[in-house]
Length: 202
Image (cartoon, rainbow, N blue to C red; front, side, top):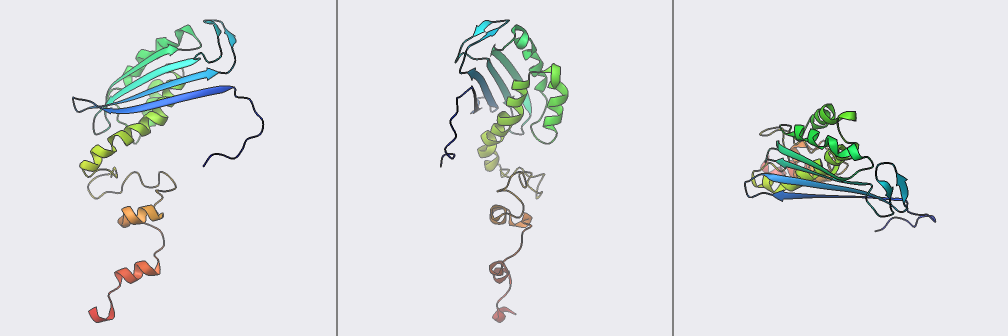
């Protein structure tokens, strides 16, 4: 179902983000993101002379190599296009992501290493948004094979994925169906009937 019809308007900007997840031959995984910003009009630029309509204002790549536990083994950033010549000079800083684990505390650690003048706004947004979530999606099948699809806090622990969105709220029907032991919503008459013994069993 599409969005409702818009008012008359004129497109100004397009941001395209593509993220792919790969299983490598060595057992590790690559999460590769590509961000491109374009305008519908040309404009002068001090470092590049002029940026024409449809020509990338930003064109950036980021690759993370991770293992099945979300530990980053390597990171590589490339800037094909930026509004300033020196934009690409910060790319080596993304090497410092190696050793971090995507999970609780990851956002804070990334901001400490690559926040503000120590990184690139667009690459950090790409990393913390679609790339981090794509890493979880890429490893889902692997975790499912290992009985870890719910990403629990440990054996028998509460799955970390709970309460991360509307559908996975602890009182939702989805959690009631898939993780009934962690369901916090109201019980229905049908639920009570299923758990109460019939009179002949008393």
